[in-house]
Length: 370
Image (cartoon, rainbow, N blue to C red; front, side, top):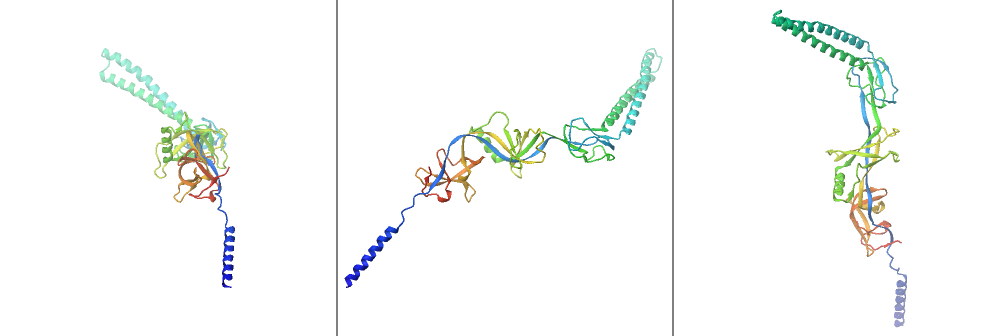
C-alpha cells in the first residue's frame, strides 16, 4: 500500500513538470527598429539667428534758425525726396537782415572805391616829395581797411542769405517721414534737442543679428581647414518673418563686427536686404538664415534620432554590425531643416535608430526593420 502511494506521488510530480515545461514561453525575438544610414555628402552650411531691422539711413530734421513755424508742407507717413520743403519758418526778420547786409556791402565797396585811388595818387606824389611818408602810409592803411571791410560785409551778407534759406526746412535725405512734433505757430530754436520730424530710408534696409563668438570661430576653422568651402562674394541672407513666412527678397551679409560684446559673448552681423515695398519696418524682430558656405563632408541626421543626456550632450543610439545597440556622444553644429548637422561622433555607414527608441537600450540586441 505504501509503495502504491509513493508511485502515485512520483507520477503526479512528473506530470506537473511536463506541464511546466510546456507552459514556459519561448525567448522573445529582438525588437525591430527603424534606422537611418549615415551618408556623407556636400550640404550648405546655414545658421539661423535672431535679429532686428533698422533703417538704412536716418535723418532727424532740426531747424537751423529760430522763429515761428508758419507752415507744415508734408503729409505724415508719406515718402519725401531729398530737398523737398517740409516747413516754412517766419522769414521777415531774416529778409531784413539780408537787406541790411547788402547795404553794408555797398557802403564798404564805396569806401574802398575812395581809398584805393587815394593810395595810388599818394604813391605818385611820394616819388616827387609831394606828400610826406606818413600821409602815404595812412592812405595805404585806409585802403587795406576798406578792403577788409568789404570782405567782412560780404561774409555777413552770405550769412544772412544762408539764414534766410534756412527758413525753408528741407528733407536732408529721401525716405519715409514720420510724425511731426510741431504745428504751425510753434516757436522753434536753432539746433534744438527735439527734432521736428524724422526721415528714414527703408529701401534697402539693414538686418542686424548676433552670433556667438564661439560659433564664428568654429566656422572660421572649418573654412581654413577646407572642410567648408565658401563661395566668392558675400554670404546670402534669407529673412524669416515673425509669422514664420519667408521674406521674398534675398539679402547679403555686409559685415561682421570686429569686437565681442563682453556681456553676452556675441558678435554683431549686419545684412543689407532689398525692401522695395517697405514690408520690413525698422524695429521688427526677424530671424536671418545665413548661408555661410558648403560643408563638403556634412553628416545630417533626422532630429528624432538625437537626444540629450543628463549632461546636456547630444547622443544617438546606433545599431552596430553585430545587432547590438550602442550609445554615442555627438557634437552638433546646427540644423538643416528637420535634421541635425553632426560635426563628430558618427561616420558614414553608421545606422542611427530613429524609430522604436523606446523599445531598446544600450547593450541590448535589435534588428533593423526592412
